[in-house]
Image 1 (cartoon, rainbow, N blue to C red):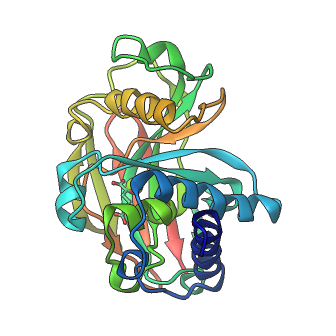
Image 2 (cartoon, protein in one colour):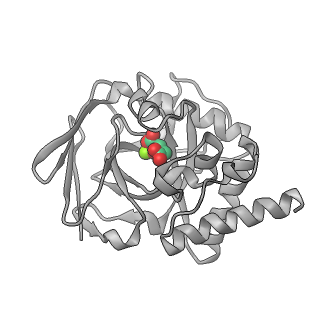
Image 3 (spheres, rainbow, N blue to C red):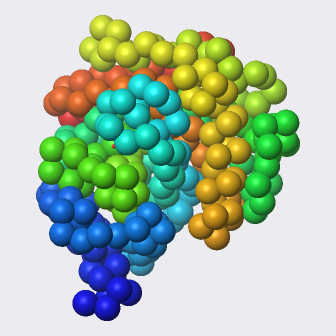
Length: 257
Ligand code: OOG
Ligand code: MG
């Protein structure tokens, strides 16, 4: 297969796996794709959702904490795309049947104030942030057994499948040193601190600015950015009630039916 044709073929397979909720073999078992090609596959695959009338509403960063890198065995920062259909309302619910093998993890969400189209540094980040909110991400690798290489996970939109955003707050405070407690059915399941995200969650935005520049993407005003989980992710079960409190930011919740 010609390379462009191959990328389209893989993008179609990943989109179908997500649509049908059926895991597929890791693409790296069959094809050697580069990281640049993996981002091209990601874009092509998400474009198929946009063709079905989903709207792009933001981006997610991944592997910005040691806890996540170690849990999944991938040690490079990655980014993926968020569409409107992936959003679950705060205090709402989601159905297990809509996933393959979903996991949940705590996230911090930022709303972008003005377009990011060049590399920005830590001192500049606050100028680009309109609001901040507590959040949760549902990740659901389209690969069997949630096993993947760096290129596999990037092509698969970094496992992103759903997200919940709590109440937006003015971003006029220091995002460091926020204690995070994720409770499942009343029992604390994961505890972490926002410092686990690159030492400062704002660094997730500086990293995003570098990566978007590299891959020719611009982050528009109004985009939602997930900074990456501060703790390991946890498998969801039917009937789970997930509640996560973030010091200074508040609580975000959803349930699984
Ligand atoms: C990949 C996604 C990583 C994060 O917050 O670090 C991620 C995965 O763990 O399957 O979303
Ligand atoms: Mg995440």
